[in-house]
Image 1 (spheres, rainbow, N blue to C red):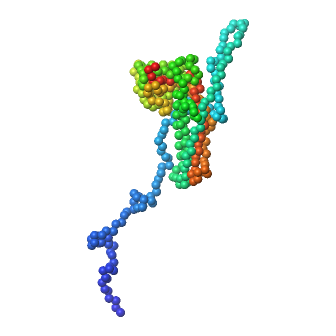
Image 2 (image 1 turned 120 degrees about the vertical axis):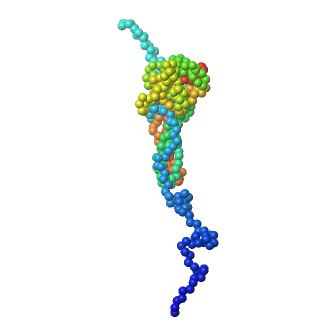
Length: 333
């Protein structure tokens, strides 16, 4: 039986390769095919790997540098005490064969720095710890350390002494000179005008510097924040030269009237009655007592499926010698 080629019925016609275009020409219909891109997830974006920088950037916060210039002691318990003498040991003159009357003995005073415990207790899920593209535990430890440095620095300057160190700016202040003030009271000098320097600001700074007795000036430094330092850097002496001098070598602090300047962001800005500038020997004047280094406890059991990181640091501080730190108060008197 011979096979006769017959024309195919219209419904059984084979669609050519460019059927989409033919459909558009004949019927106005289109066959749309979306390209794979990484813009949206369902169009191929899920297949594109995300890269996360392992070094996570953080907003830098100013950590007070008071610890670097103060006297830091390691203690074995929270009950730290320090004995200081007031008045010295009186002496007298006598001839070779003359009698030696008894002299007065020194007066001992107990110094007890207020102590408190800094703590942080952040948590992260175990899945986060397992799947994160960076070391979450190391990152949290660094964040805690940075926050602790900021918190303790603020306490060294402005702490109220309740479950935390007592800052040197919260001590009692007086215009009385050394030897005429109660123990623990700091001397301040007025700037000569409210909210600003009075006449001859260079002389006000010299007066503040010279109010610190010579034994303390060995190792003394200025302490102020960046805004106050910006104001100081614009000041010039009577000879027309700037009072502020940049460091002569990299890493060396700038100097004001020959003494290094330490920037502490916790110091107040220049304002009415603000104690914005300090000058002193903080190694002799401020005592920091710490129990130990920061301790971090990893706790994966208390709050499953989260892992808690409980960090603590026991630290205290107070003024040790009120004659070693002087303050400039922005006031007329």
